[in-house]
Image (cartoon, rainbow, N blue to C red; front, side, top):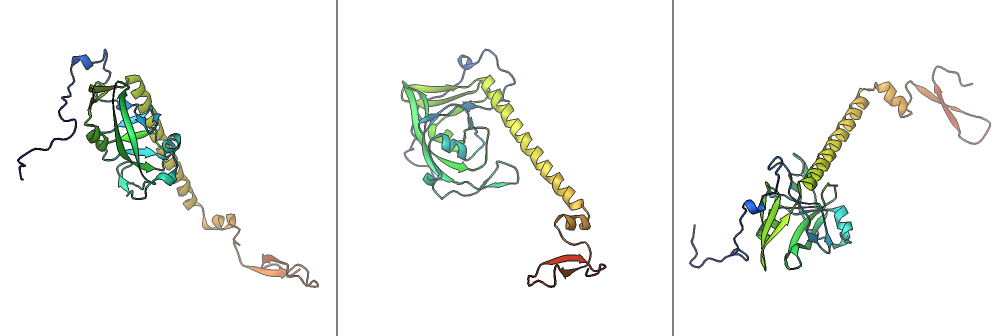
Length: 238
């Protein structure tokens, strides 16, 4: 390790961010069990269901949110790479990347930074997910007990509040959506299994394949057309 002679401090690093009893809500149900959901302005639109996820190394935007912002896929860059972690054992391939301004705060004290989003084509219950790149860019500090997010601003520390009711509703919606996916995948697996258990003769009959030897018989030998019927070899030509 090499120690530099003159430290280079990041922007906004001079602002101290703390939490104390002044931040404590009147009631804290099930501390740490609810998601931190905020409502920043992304692009020119305020989004009310944006998940702050300190465990994610990406900022994620859903394709339907892209449409909500009045943007189309032609504005995406094609330099996105696949990533893992949304669903265990599965890889997600983004539709592309896009840089968008993100704003937190009030008209008297706000911060706006440009973040890079991975745009994905599958559906989610949130409008977007802001991960560690967002925390680092805004020098933001979350408190998952109080459901608050703080960051330095031009006129002091900016505090973004959430509510337990809103967090609970988002969490329930997310769980119901996940269970619906699991149930649909189980249904598809059961149908596939049932299909594999059907006897070969019945599967052939469903696809209009003959179950025994057949021969071709002309419908009318006196005509010049070639219309034929398929009949069993045990039947006569008439």
